[in-house]
Amino acid sequence: MSIIIKLIVNVEGQRNANLHYDLTRRGIYYSARLITSQKGTVFKNDDYNAIKKVYSIWICTKPSPDARGTCQRYTIGKEDFIGSYNVDSKHYDLMTVVVLWVGDSTDPNY
View 1 (spheres, rainbow, N blue to C red):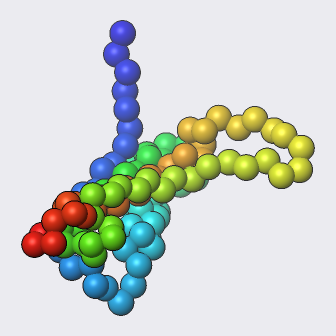
View 2 (cartoon, rainbow, N blue to C red):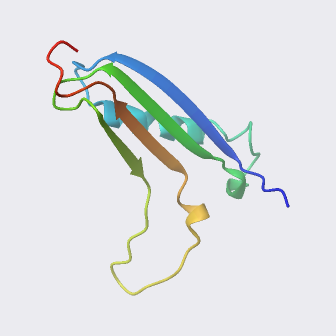
């Protein structure tokens, strides 16, 4: 049995952690752009069911000492706040952003 996986992966290297914006927001922005750019290329007209999931992975090589050696994942999730209605996650789980802050937080020379 074969399984077909449809996704787009974007990997970015980020050397400088001292930015004038938050790297997480940038990752979310890039992911949103990867989704919207699929219209007209991956799918035509209103065939939104053909959207491929996107992963944006950010590797920061010179993070601040408190961020070193950590990794975060940001996703889209569903939250019922009035009643409950089941929707398959394949319809809303369309982007994941991963931020990896490399390094050893205990090494003062890193």
